[in-house]
Image 1: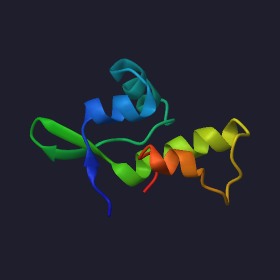
Image 2 (image 1 turned 90 degrees about the vertical axis):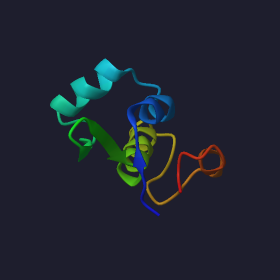
Image 3 (image 1 turned 180 degrees about the vertical axis):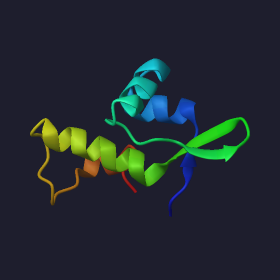
Image 4 (image 1 turned 45 degrees about the vertical axis):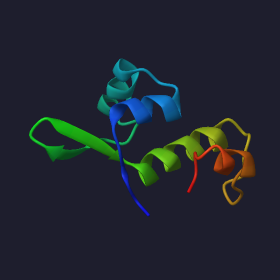
Length: 78
């Protein structure tokens, strides 16, 4: 199920700071948030999880067709 993640959860899952997240969004290197209200945004959990998986693949730690069971246990993948 696709859920929204607020900024503190995105920071916790990715290990990135608020400023780095928004810098990478500006550079097109991180998923953009969705407006949830006039003063609230959230990220689709599937987009953040896909981004994390792509970082792991890019680091050569995981083949694209393989998901790491340890990351699933940690809640990084659905």
